[in-house]
Amino acid sequence: MPKGKLFLIPNVLADNTQDAVITPQVREVIANTKVYLVENMRTARRYISSLKLGVNLDHVHMEILDKGTSPEFINRLMQPLINGADIGIISEAGCPGIADPGALAVEHAHKKGIQVVPLSGPSSMFMALMGSGFSGQSFAFHGYLPIDKKEKAAAIKKLEAESLRERRAQIFMETPFRNNQLLEDLLKTLAPQTKLCIAKNITGSDEMILTKTVEEWRQIPLDLHKIPTVFVLQSF
Image (cartoon, rainbow, N blue to C red; front, side):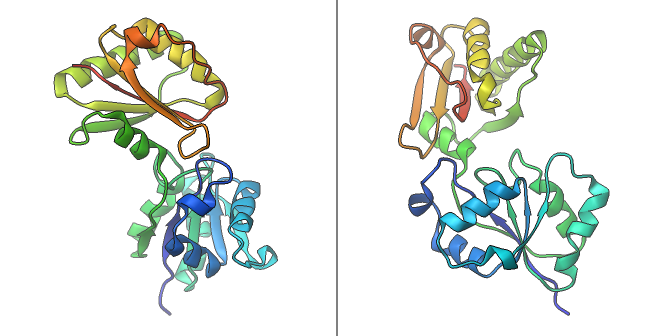
């Protein structure tokens, strides 16, 4: 029996944007897929329903794939692929596999000779970089910085030094309810001339992607509390 395919299905970044950012290809795959690995079942079901594809969710099987999923459990989750069924991976937002546990399933698929099909869709990291004006030739995504203030400050200085040395744009993020604390630490730690791009609620109605020096940001009151935000810095 031929093996199924593993589809990496992008989710929206902001509410009520599916008509603008979700492609016909993604819609077609969702309309024909019955098995999913998802970070959050409620979010995934709401997303599929929002596309209005006529999918009967009572006939859709979902399993949780999140940061708590053990590598040993992945083998069971992937069994439908061996039996010939396609599986779709849907993360909480954006593209699976980037700062996301979907990478565990992708790694397993490659080991088992299963075709992996990434689908085009919104990615907050790449859209922030595109809108920043920074180097698209040399960049690095670092995910989440340390929570501890001393470790975080050291990490920020390290990113700044590496950016200056390598002429590299540095992309990172934070849990939305800690955004304001991260911004405060960035403005305290970075050199005044370092440039910082703040990209909040990308694709949303109140989207902001704005690049200024740290010195300029220090003069601007900004509340990022609970707003999905990506930060990009580059030192010159």
